[in-house]
Image 1 (cartoon, rainbow, N blue to C red):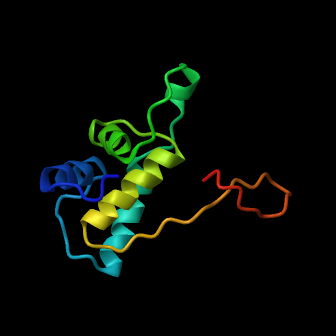
Image 2: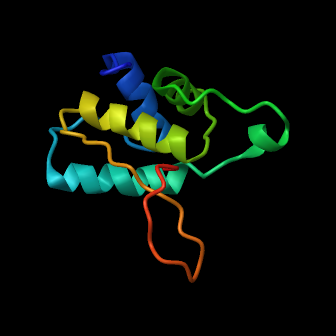
Length: 111
């Protein structure tokens, strides 16, 4: 599993989400990163519908983003976690699930 991005990858990722500089890992910078990530990276399933689902490994997910693409939840969340870890943030993964409207919340490990 990829744990850290190198400086060039960090800079390319930040550029992709409209951030120019690497900053210290503060709460304010975390908020800036999250806002930029949501603003510049759309949830995208084009590859699935085209019959070419992209790999969901962390390295593949990061490369999708750096190369100007996007992805679905596994790509976006996985890549963002590596970016945050590379910038000095502590990142913990948790299981999640998709809750259809009107159903009780549950964790089905789907997310």
